[in-house]
Image (cartoon, rainbow, N blue to C red; front, side, top):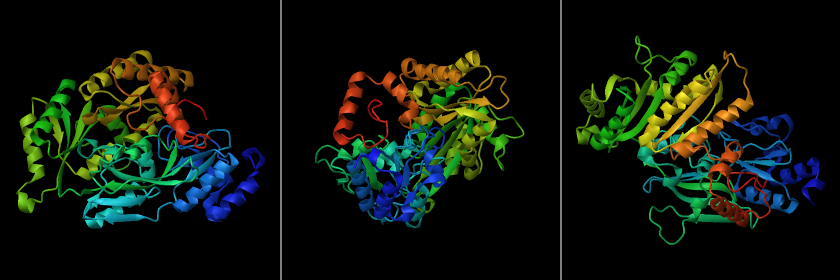
Length: 479
């Protein structure tokens, strides 16, 4: 029976026979699965929520037999629409939110086997009693499967790397042969027995297979932290300061986050219980949130990390920095993680998640702001990001009080201009962390060499010849 010949009542019965009544949603209950965190709004045929890998297998086989398009979805926190259905109403959203029964910690191996539906916060809660954590620090609470599918980075990438760097093994359910389970890798840090096949499924937003379980390396929780929000003497001083940190304190440097004055003020003005760390002075034009971490216990190392940071910053005064707020780490990180909320309160964000060589990141921010001020003076730039790894969230806000009404054509011209600058002028990426998805597909087609697009098409054709999976992250827009 083809998908077109199978009405919803028949499909509902077939899916309920696999996952039970609680495992299938329809009607208004699907709303949270049909809209992305920032972009992506569609209509699902049904939402199916398998609770174990056998149920995932059976759903995939049903889809293959009936020619049903499916869309894998984790916690749906992505920013490029890759986890939300299109408007056709034909796609079956396969949510992994109930796939969460396994979270097995091997303390001595510093690894954990975890189901794809377990969230980052749940994983860290499970690890905390063992003095461990998975230190990919985000403003959201994604699922582990979604983090694999998007190769999440976050604010501590310079110390711990991204998901790819910490991934030991994967369990995936294939589209072809439909429903076949494959185990890729083991809980090993050294395994040079051939191609590392698990990496094919990292960063592709679910193309070709559904991630159902991951084995990841976890880390010892720091014994000490030291945090400061510092004001650089100039744009040029930012890289000088970063290099000084890496030269003198590189063993402990965990975060080096840039925050523009606009970003800081948006958070302070619109998020309750936030204050300006530099009060009574105004928020500076630019500041850097820096954090050091050490696993060495003060009992044995005689190390006081806060004293180390304070001494280092004193030596940097007048050369690379002109002010510093040495405060409560929780308070400073709350300010950093509140920027997106503050930006949304100002108006409608036009988000750019981009990266450039870090040596040019301040130059890019300066030129990007100049472009917006010159050509779109009614828009406001609220930028912040991961200076140490070259990533920046160059958010542009169409303010609620702007004299011009929101215009999609204007936004498209702005996107074309910013992404063109990033890729062509700065040798950067139009998507540093969030992936491609429908939101960035046109730029994938514009900036990815045709040969590489052909390779991606061929790879996907081999893994998913029926085009069951609805993601568009790999290859051109076939679905």
